[in-house]
Length: 197
Image (cartoon, rainbow, N blue to C red; front, side, top):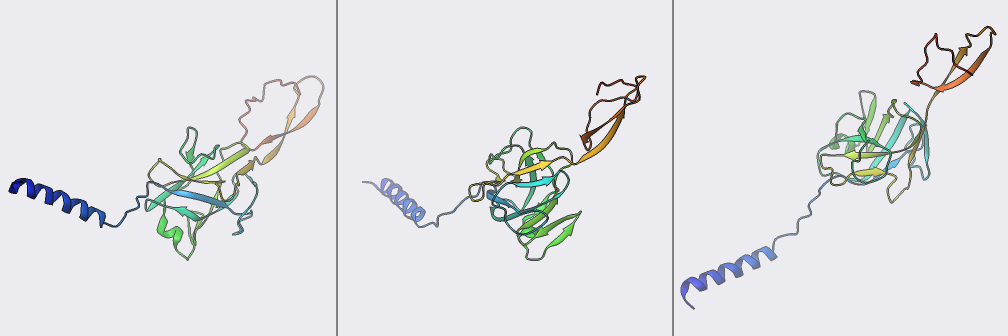
């Protein structure tokens, strides 16, 4: 074996030996874990069942079981509990700093309380009643933390607030009927439209 072959073999051996002594590094790709939902109204008690809220009411979320890859995140409102951003999901919070969330002191910013692994935030107002989940997006859509995960299978069921609207018939008989519609309903009614009730 000549000198060049010996040098190459030694270089390969040293490379293999030095790599085996490197500490193993864990790479976090995205936020992961379970977002736990607090029992309304605005309490720090973890729910073990479905949480019922009215659209626009505050929701209390616990992030103690969430691991973050990034230093900032925002919350996503979703119809599914998949740990990914899906079609139809939408952002409903400002961008938060993970340091503020993990801080033991709670701060109030734009009507949202954040700190000590908790966020107290109003739910979106432009949604219909039904089952929903909250997801946490921190820059990588490979995987996201979601409420109703493996630890506490809790989802959020929202109900629409109602208003009472009186519709008066425009026929010769003067009858009126009270109909309860969701607040913000977009049912197309014109004042001059005759609607059978």
